Length: 320
Image (cartoon, rainbow, N blue to C red; front, top):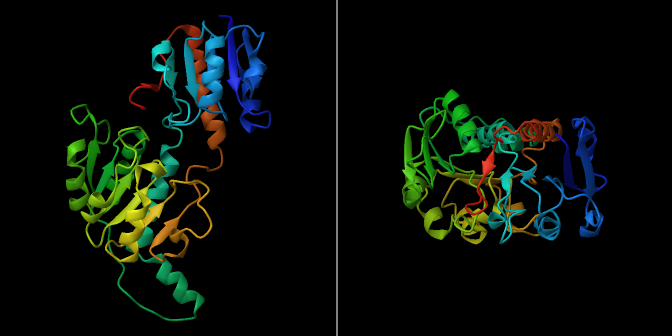
């Protein structure tokens, strides 16, 4: 099948080399400005690599024949704009590519606090013999806000440690997938999940409904021994009440891979708090992640060319 594929990417994008493997008959047009697509054959499909919504908003009207838009990222908040859903194109994302690495990071964060690795490192550096009893995570409750692909990957690894899993999702009546949590709560019971769980994992995408979802009320509901872990999107968690709770030792700690503002500004309170574990939005940037993301797209491209159902279809209206 002949196909014109517009690729929204900067010329230095390392993933472009993978596109040398596109099947015969696929014409590639690569650009990072609206003008790069002027006068080009209209796209049948658009692949958003390293560019975002403004470029997609500009070029989509130039491609009236486009039937598919793929986001290399798992989150689609960076490409959604008013009118995308109404355009009728099918939108897919990179869901699943990043879940294993993020899930491993979450488990590492849980063990970091349970075993108090910071104290161990500080004692070693000080040349100090400081025995103390580490905690077990077996039997603890993990609460997962956003029981999607990332949440399920986290749950599977938590189960291997003997943890119990409590999930929360907007569409609580849908089958949760594998593994099923020990308990599934609807979105309106978020405060209950925060109060009942020992470790809170935020893995929900950023949508109008989830922006600022975790605020003062939810953080105050947490156990004093609770740990908040965010591998979803920074804007889902309100940082001011989180900083206040951490300073007051109202909760044990927080492990954060994402932030309201990135890069995290110099002088931000998180840098100085000894009960915070920071990662510069790199928990999923493991060796091979880019190859995996490009491979996922190429597999979907094969489906598109063959007229088969696409994988990882998302709803631009809901954001996932």
